[in-house]
Image (cartoon, rainbow, N blue to C red; front, top):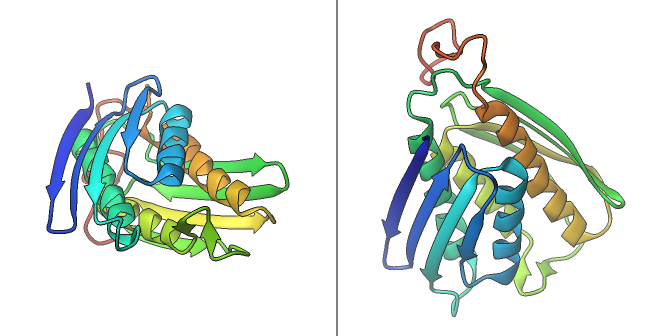
Amino acid sequence: MRQATVERNTNETKISATVNLDGSGQYSISTGIGFLDHMLEQLSRHSLIDIEVKAEGDTHIDFHHTTEDTGIAVGEAVSQALGDRTGITRYGSALSPMDEALTRVSLDASNRPYLIWKVDFVRDKLGEMDTELFKEWFQAFAQAAGITLHVESLYGENNHHIAESSYKGLARALRQAFEIDPRKADAVPSTKGVLGGSL
């Protein structure tokens, strides 16, 4: 089973994250940030990655540290669960509609982290969560997971829909990229024979 657990403890947060890449979309999420919990539940359900997250952070200050460090912990767990990435399909993409919003997500599980974020929100907050923190989560996740990740909101008006379609698009793209390719299950999907490093 491709699974891993990461513990991340700092002066700002205490986080435990467990993932099973070959799961069925089961989740147990508790970050202290209701909307982030909702997004991580969507990520699990639509990627079929089992995700458990328990986070305690300095949310009395704001949600920044908990949001970012949760992205780091989940990303690190994903990277560890992938191992040397032998057999994975590697690439994934999705168009994710939610009512009036449409988001395009494309990724390469290349072990070369990079984020392109073209998502604009029309309000500064979603409930109590600053909308600028979504980029911070995606940046932290992509960096820690070793994923080249492009997220683009093609259009949308409702902030909830824009954010949720971004996470659901990520989920579907991850599901595609992490699947084992039955034609090359014994090979790393790169002409170099290893993923990561220079182009």
